[in-house]
Each structure stands twice: as C-alpha cells, then as structure tokens.
Image 1 (cartoon, helix red, strand yellow):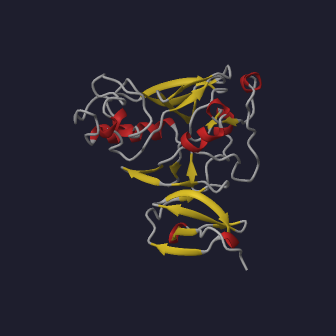
Image 2: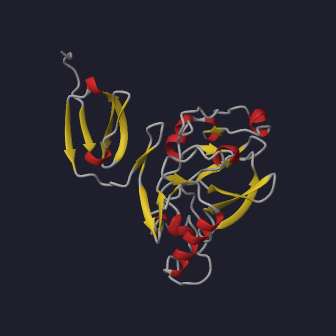
Image 3: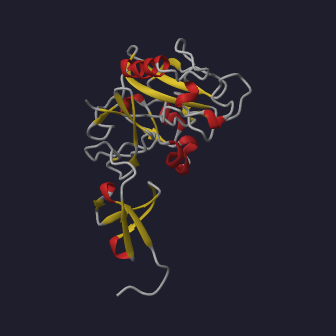
Length: 265
C-alpha cells in the first residue's frame, strides 16, 4: 500500500501511451512533462490523442509531426543519446576532443543539459550519416528533400509578403518563441507572432563549430542534411533572426548542428 502523500495525476494520450521499462509517460496538453514508475501513479485519465502521428525514439523522447505538402516532418529537433540499435552516442564536452573527432558524437549547447531539452542535441555528421540516428520509419533529409520543402512553401504563398517567387520563407519555418528580435522587413525576428505558419517550428538552437566553440543560440538554427559536399564537408540549412530567407551552407563534418527527420515513404 502506498503511503499518503501528494496525489499524482497522470493524463495519458491513449494512442501515445508508451510502456517501456515499467515507465508510463505523463502528458499535459500533448507535451511530455515528466515520467514516473507505474507504482507512483495514483490515477490515469484517458482522452483522445492530440497527435496520433507522434513517434518515440529509443531514449523515450516524444516527437510530434506536421505534414507539409507531400512530406511529413518532425516538429522537434532530435534529442536521442543512443542510436536506434541501442548503441550509446558519445557525449563530447571537451572542445579539443570534439574538434578531432572522426567518429559519431553529440553535445548539448554549451554542455548544458537543459539546452538539449529545449533545442535538441547537436550532432556531428559522423552521427548523422551513421544510418542509425533517426527512429525507425524516419530518416535524415537529403538536400533534395529540403529543396522540396522550400519549393512547396514558396509556391504556396508562404513567403512573408505572400508572393510565390523568391526565397522569403524563413518566418514560415521559424518558431514563435526564442528568437532574437530584428527590425529587418520579413526577418525571422521581426514580430515573432507571424512566424511558423508552416508548423515546422524551427528553434534557434545555435551550433558547435569544428573548433569546439559554441555559438548562435537565440540567433540562428542550423540543420544537417545527409548530403555530403566532399570528403571533409557536408550541406546544411539555416535560419537567422535577421534574415527572411532560408540559407544554404556547407560545413566541416566535425561541426555540431541540429537534426530534423522526415518520414519514410
């Protein structure tokens, strides 16, 4: 018999109820708040799931999804610390070790674990292109898949000014919170309430350079693609608080960037 104490109320989404290692996930308005052992739960209320397409990774992190055109994308950045086969991805805190890696690694921004909960993890390309990072049924997007996303948004009037030509879709992809402010016309940081019309909800998680230095949280969000440029570089996409366009860049494989996944078809 449990001792008398604080009553714990578990609000569980029926289609997202996950039982793993005797743990139930506690939800509030569709978001994971905490988790407790089954014996600690006093009562459970079941109600209709807000997101039946949600997916859980091997670390039990919950990700929601959004369909944009013909593609379905995760709404959150990856947070997993393990590959889907259970292998642990090394958490590299030392900058010198990070800069010399030629094997998979991840970190939290500024090595502060709470940042991973907010922005997701930063992975080097060796982790990204391991073939084991994305949950089953999902994959790291290619350059062509990012281009498909961008072309759909442009052609369907997601430019900040409603036009259907040119690349002015950054606000439609950026979240409504967390970004530095800007007075530039159509910039991500200019009136955050007008962001995220696509539902992609891109956060300014910053990056970790190949040197091991962190930079950019609050001002930029950078995402790897699985497409490599050459033996030392690979492609990525980024949003910047002072810009209205999605940026196309390539960077050293040792760099740490956020990762979004797209559903397999």
